[in-house]
Length: 501
Image (cartoon, rainbow, N blue to C red):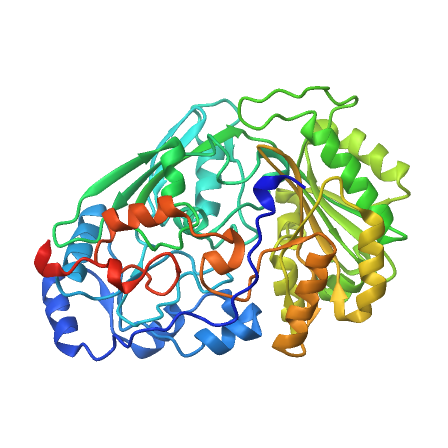
């Protein structure tokens, strides 16, 4: 396994101590006076809804975050209004948590210390589409962006986003960059942090006199996956590729190892067909294969998909969901057949919609857990990284070891260093101790576990404190007001008193 993915700290089982910032009636009143004219809400039901994301996937996060509430929801409609809100928050020393579509799974947008929820949904404009790029506001829905770039005539046939989460239809681009990592498209184009995937980010600082800072290229990592702890992202530029009318495909297999062997071979072929960034395949694939999604789920997931697909995914078969370039469909079908597979669906997204079927990307990544939880709320999940090439014998041994306690699901992806296999297994939740026993067993098997049952950046996927992000927080959020409690790299002693500024 590559060194860039394996630096692991043991999970921290206690969360940072939180300050009570909710006894601030006078500060809130002064803040409201300063943002006169900007849309906002104090409605208790609205605040309850907007204080949550999908953290309820985890029983531990449900316990830790279920009662957290913001005190005011603010909906700025322009960068100028964001600057007005940011200045007022800093002057009155109110915590501020930025919210996109609220589709995160780790409490990224949950306000731990009350204060302001800054909802970016009205910052939704597509500002410019050019060959290879789209420049937009942070609150733009990824579905709307995808439709816009496909329809724009600046490139014949349109363009498409390089990747998106399984919640594409309701997720925002700012939320994806601020709290996400990869998703559908990562098999073809890598992960968000790979060079060239996000090229520019515009950030408003949280100061009495806010500034606007533009980050380019590698400097974008200062705010990528920082959970909105170090600046308010208002605009972004992300890269595009020529549009492909992907074929959403289901293949069934008599065993999960068969399905995995197809995925491993296919991932190798995609790597040798479609370069990431400026790289070139060392040995071109023969025949070539182009795919946007390759997801394997074992047969015990079938009941969760019965309503969506019926006999297309029966309970006695293991499945691979994929999105395949139409020019490469014959190659994919030959690979499926060579591994003993059977095709049960091959439709474009337009055809799926016409037939009332869900797209393949909603059958992968974290949507698999959502499908299960709609049936049975006793499930939770884990997020792991396996070595490459995937040790299929090890996966079989894990399935035998855990039985019905763990259901297997693997996502095949790439980053700039090569293929990556993410595991998103379902786990039958018993209690915290048993969950972490399973995590320890995964780690003993050589897997990296990205702990999705904690809400701090470092205890989850990042594993270490990112000093560049903390240094940028000192610049963009000198008072430590942004999404407090989400990073262990910041302490109250680092905050600069307002009187000094």
